[in-house]
Image (cartoon, rainbow, N blue to C red):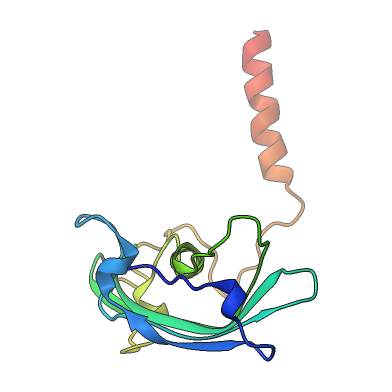
Amino acid sequence: MSLQFDPNTLPGDGLDIQGSLPPSFFDLAENDQARPVTPLEYNLHVSKDEDGELFVTGEVSATFELHCGRCLEPFQLRIEQTDFAHQIPMENGTPDLTNLLREDILLALPTYPRCETGNVTPRECPAEGRFDSPTEPSGDEAPDASGKNTWEALDQLTNLKKN
């Protein structure tokens, strides 16, 4: 499952590459937080400049199942990169685009997924508001911006050490 091509056969106006790679392409462990549920779809244009550098631009997308960091329920998130762009130096002979595609999609996944950010089936998180602090000020109360209480508490701690 690699996306390789011979740069010496690139036409002057570049090469258009379209297709998909199966979900197993992402090579994620079974117990990983993210599970791909659709193939990786790509629509790329590869061109070469006069220095022999390759430019890859286009679109890549895939859908993943994640678990919400709040309610732990699964939800789906579609990652779509419509501005995929990479410059590849021609040092190694035959370039392989698979790692570039995999990395760009996986790096776009959220580190703390929340189900209300799911864009396949939008919904509100069932745990919304369940874990709010009871000491948070309501909308009517303004928090003490002076920080006076904080400093007083710290002063008391240093006074305890002196005694």
